[in-house]
Image 1 (cartoon, rainbow, N blue to C red):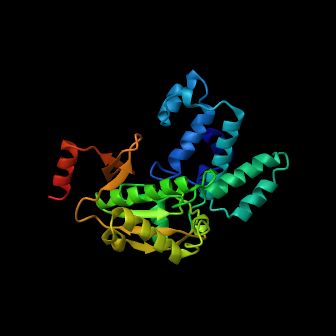
Image 2 (image 1 turned 90 degrees about the horizontal axis):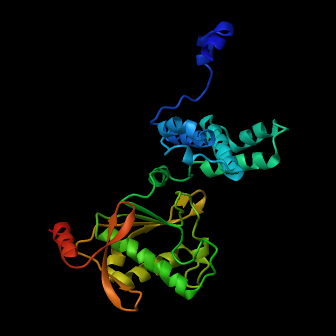
Image 3 (image 1 turned 135 degrees about the vertical axis):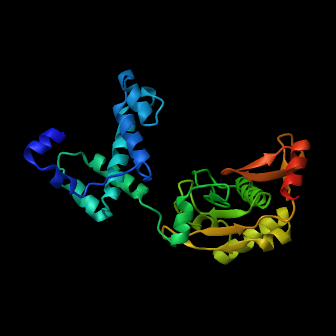
Length: 292
């Protein structure tokens, strides 16, 4: 390519074109490389190339048409963002390709929207941009399932118990931030379903009262009072941000085993999960080390 360009166009002019030049440090670098490799590396002769891109080999290549279409749409969306296009500009560009099927254009535009950075307070956007960590957890909802499951008292109780577990895990570690109304990808889902789940909730004030009530009943009113609760906006939707301090002493959660037996469990934040510390020597060692 360089030889062909040099014989007709000076490389100096080519280098001045506004083409994105990514390095391995750019967040889009690896996703683009791997998406392209999964499209290209579909046979054993491409194994070396696939491994160089961070894949296991050609077995990670995508051959089904639906999967390949999704990867192509993702690449189109990422590249559009690299060029700093707005949604209107990208839509206009897609419209200039009359031979491309409309469903392909729609898929590219949908990927563009999904890949758009979150909108909101810069500090909150930075926080969700880092994903779930040992100090940050996302929860889609406090009371209402978001996977299409029909709501029920039993499922609501399960979801609220998950919130309690996460709070306890942060207390037993180094504290952290719980964001409710945010999906696993760090995009705002909002709290409207939770607000509508009970006449006693209805709005942010009712939501906060209910949240503190659930935590207070399970972990004690001292813990509930120590939570710092706010309602910032993410992607134009109101979410709940809960700042949880590191606990001054261990906090146990009452859980029910499969056999129906109730027991106290000690949850701790490890990586991006709340993990239970087994009883006995391991729990004793953790408690002594954590609150020495």
